[in-house]
Image: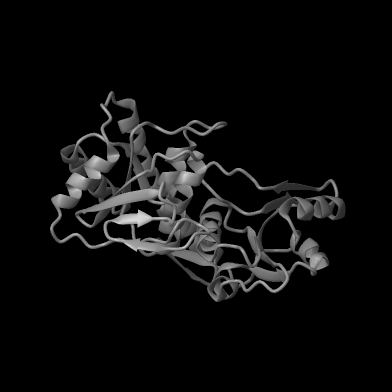
Length: 302
């Protein structure tokens, strides 16, 4: 069932006490739940799972939604036809998993209490720690955006940093969503020749270049956003524990904006551990890495 069809059915069944929003636009999320339902003190986020659903993106969306919504929110996977949801999300990520034919059960869940297995206080603690990490990265990014820096080629900066890192380890993140993986050293290829992300490592911090291609900023950011959230977090009884508090650096040649929220790209990137920064010089980016690592360490251990 498509998200807008599901939303219409929920509006009809739940009545005026509830607000139903298909494809909600959250200020920190590149991709959130398919439908968000709120009313009578309850909040439910539903995720459509079809055969074509990217499992890595789905995992990232569930992690991000857990971090962004109030701790008592219900997260429900709605499975279509013969789709096979990731076992880890079924067992650890979602509060409930329903077939799309179980619509009456979903209606009941929208006014149900949070899952008993969800450790709400523990989740709130995880959310607070992530918020400190995220806000530190965002603050550094915004401070740099206010400075009159001269932009250079992001690819050339990364290439220089690669040459300075003789022990560079090949980084192969997940491919762009829905496309086959093409493994290539020192670059992230999507399978399309116009989407290549060169990468370098500075003090074990990933430095990448945001590709300049003819796509929306959300489409260009989504693979980075998805990669970091899927890699850095692990679910345990519904709580996404952060494995790493190592910031990543995403170089741009001009500050990207979002149509209805100019600051959203940098904010959404920071939410997923990417510090967006104007490509300047290799020396300046090395200094940025050192300062960001120091700032994160001081903030988290204050």
